[in-house]
Length: 153
Image 1 (cartoon, rainbow, N blue to C red):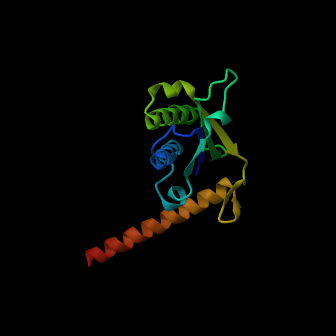
Image 2: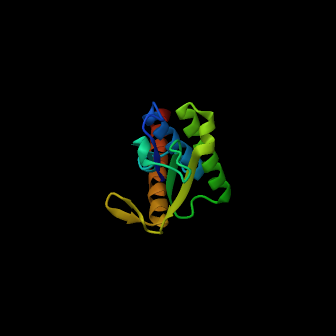
Image 3: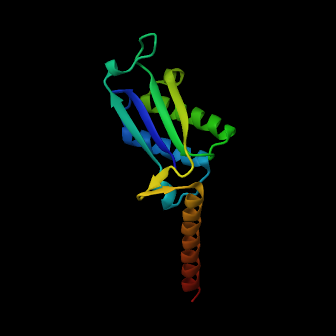
């Protein structure tokens, strides 16, 4: 259930909502979590427009994008980290309509500490999140079984 923050100069992206949705969906795919409400409703991206004069690299350029991905600890192994960075960079460049932006997009992956993922006022551990996912998947399976029984009658 990652949280994604994108920081860029104002005007870099014309459709920030679609960018946010695409980034969130991409990270969910890389995390390989099921498309259930627990993950769909708690995976989000935030697009932050900054005045162009509020960001700069050491050379003085302000045409960079920083993408910060916060994930629960241990969910992205090295292959997934490489995949997330590549895909998010491509999504950002496409959303900006600037293929050269791949050269100026920084993606930072940060892990929250165990027990540091708060939802609904509770600091969840990995075990808590896993338990909630299993409970939702069990409920979905039970609903499907009931629907199949009703159809068979």
